[in-house]
Length: 110
Image 1 (cartoon, helix red, strand yellow):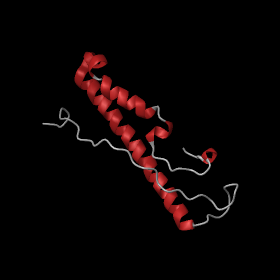
Image 2: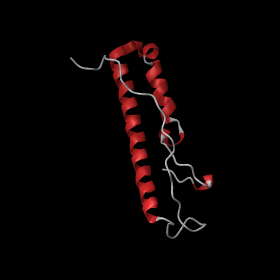
Image 3: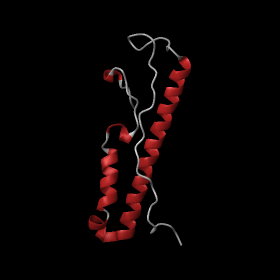
Image 4: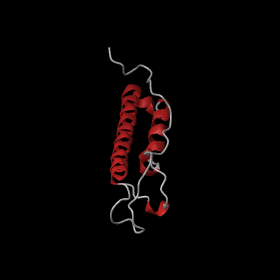
């Protein structure tokens, strides 16, 4: 049989923001103060973005499975997965963990 009807085993937790290293100059251009930390923060940001995309993809799959399983009763029985999906998709940056920026105006996200 398939595991489609089994209860999902997903932990609920939140991650703290990661360290971010800005460029060295005031205007945000030029060399970074610490190039290694800067590259690590860029890589971490890419990983966080990918995790956010995969989370949305998994929740979308759960909604589709629920619609297929429930048929015409999906309006009543699929309310929880749809609300969870909609709440995440409507968040800024699709729920991605962002660093704490020194200047919030420079929050360059995708």
